Image 1 (cartoon, rainbow, N blue to C red):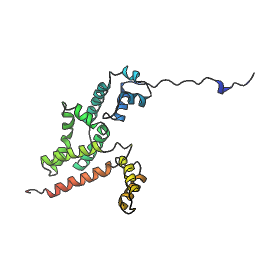
Image 2: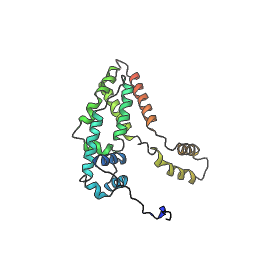
Image 3: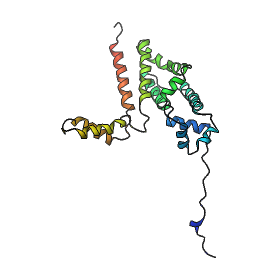
Image 4: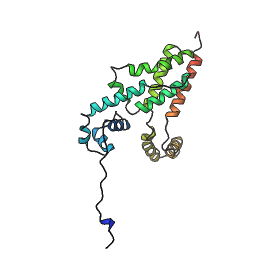
Length: 221
């Protein structure tokens, strides 16, 4: 009896990817509601667009499903922080994680449900006001941190990455090699730090600025 030629055996195909609404929502959040397409979702999940349409009616329904999930996540936000800096930092991390790649779509889609964006700030407002911030400054501080969080990069690419190539072209095209010495160093250092995320820097500077605002706004000023 001869040996079995394993190489001649037919390749067994794996099971098709398991896709349901939860997986579709996960993919939409991953890709970002501001830019995803149904074809992009299908590619990400390894299925055909027709498979997606057997679970959802289209892009609008996907957005509604993601919106519902994020509303629950934001309304369920809790933190053990007992001072305003810690609360704002944890709040920023939540907003960035849940809304970062979908901010424009979600802010427009949830315009009629303002409580998703307002009542979550109640504990933070109380901490800020207890620390001596005026009610208006407290509100501005929460809104500022929210804006910083939703504009930060998702972490998959540095937020400055889109400027690296045109910066290199500008520096290389300069007739005077000394014309852009600082810009060249910045470009080289940023390129070497690929994967660096500016969010921590943005948030630190923001919190420092908020604290400085409080120090200048002494009672009676």
